[in-house]
Every structure is written in structure tokens, then in C-alpha cells.
Image (tube, rainbow, N blue to C red; front, side, top):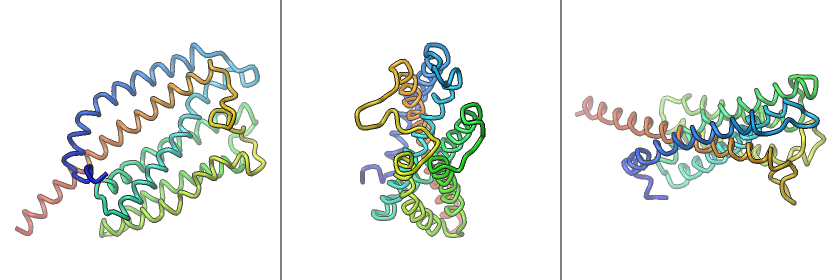
Length: 239
């Protein structure tokens, strides 16, 4: 872990990985879109509306995955003062917020024909909405202080406290009565959905994952370069 506290090493790593991650993202999402829209069958109950789930479900997985990375990187930054971890957390927040918004939007689009309403205040939907606000709160708090170090520390503490919401999202359909369907992929006993539907979900999830790493490395590189430019300017000002 401490090897990657060196920003220069992270820059070299990103230059190597970014082109491969970009190509993998394009291929996986293109393949996933074909499998979801063309190759997979319509559901016997949901009809063609099931195709929304091939975006909704991976986006929801990524919303929680990104928050887990955000909280983990925040913890590393707080405990070990790891400078790149702090930047990784900052770079992850807007990506995670985007996935969460996409999950909420596509869930609403699916809910209208299936439930007859755009939104219900059940446990799963409400906890995902809270996750979205946690991302927004992290970003707002990070930039709310004149001293960037204080902002990063306050935002990291908030991220760690907010992590309790991730298991709530995961198990909300088991703990409370909810309109949202229970887990059908990551569950004891294995997936309950047909392979023709599981494959597009897996490919899209892989594409979303490589997209996350592609974008977070680009954002991390931009943060490191911006920090170097700021340090050079301060040297010029103060001699």
C-alpha cells in the first residue's frame, strides 16, 4: 500500500492502465448492450421492461461498490495519512454519485410500468436515496473549508459513518417488508435467474467496473497534476 503513496508511481501506473481499461470498457459495454437488448429474451412477467434491469442492477451494485472504496480510501487516508488514498476517495465520490443517480433513475423508469408509480418510500429505495445524499454530502463537505486538509478529514469521517448504510441497502429486502424484489444473484444457494439473463448482467457489471477504474484513474491523475501545479505556484510566490 505504501508503494502507492508516491504520486509519481501512480501516474506511471495510470498511463499504463488507462488505455487498456478504456478499451475493455468499450468492448464490455457494447457486448453487454447487445446481449441485453438483442440476445436475451423478454421476461414472462415483466415483458420488455426487464431490459431496464440490465442497467439498473449493475448501476446499483456499482453505487455500493464505489461507496465501499470511498470509505476504505477515507480510512486509509485518516489512519496512515496516505496522500493518494485521500485523492482516490475524492475522485471516487462523483463517479459513485453518478452510478447511484443512474440506479435511482432506471429503477423509477422500471417501477412505473411494474408498480404503477415512479417512486415508493420502501426500505431499499429510501436507503439508496440516502446513499446518493451521502455522496453529495461528502463532496460538499470536502470543499466547504478554506483548509483542504480539514475538508478532507471532515469528509472522510462522514464517509466512514455513512458506510453503515451499505449493509442496510444490501439486506433491506430481507429485514423489512418491501416492494423491491429480493436478491436473485448474490444469495445463499446461488442465482435464481436464468443464464440467458445472468450473462448480460455480468457483462454489463464488468463493463461498469472497468469504467469506474478508467475514470477514477483519469480523475486521480488530474488531481495529482493539479496538486503539483499548485505546489509550483506556491514556490514561485514564496520563493
